[in-house]
Image (cartoon, rainbow, N blue to C red):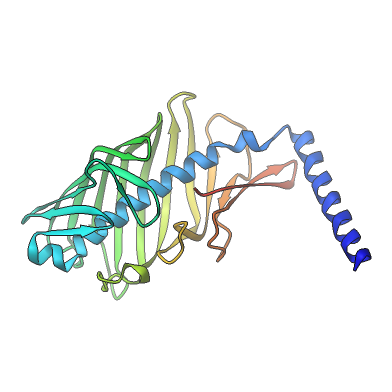
Length: 268
């Protein structure tokens, strides 16, 4: 047992040494890829807003009674609008505190193809982050798979702005609005993150669909985002949510003279 343990430690030290040599060779450190945390945090916030809006649009109690509580927020519905109000502070099922409101207008029956909705954030905070921007939704379903097209416009927090067009393909849970725990969908397309302080733009493409599973407490179960910087010379850069892991961890990859260099960061 001692020999096996020693061999394992030796291999681990050799691997660590190899990573350190690559870092020294390329001049890349974990701090240099810290912006991947910004990208993931912003994406996570946008996904939650979509999920909360989706639940409100599908909620049968809200449709029938005009009011309902969804993940702690008080929701009010009229014939063409919904207000999702977090008041002065509500802690959601994900443990995050939110305040302010999501205000949306809609047209048609959301679960049917051709329906549309658009939302704006009003004095909306996630923790101490003030989030602004608009998101438009359109049901573009064809066949048996519900598909919601999302246009995210100037979704901003801390001088960083997320923009782009993606689509949510629902694999399960779309018809069972009273059981959000069975929701599973995948995001495809791409979102760009602009840093106003550095004028850097990170063009993001979902090269492997981002799988969102409600039973996963960290939002992303799997998927890969390839990032291209307009300023920094970083090649082979990607954010990998580590297929099927469902842990509070993602892997940032970057090319180091033909060798992969990997760093790990928390999703939350």
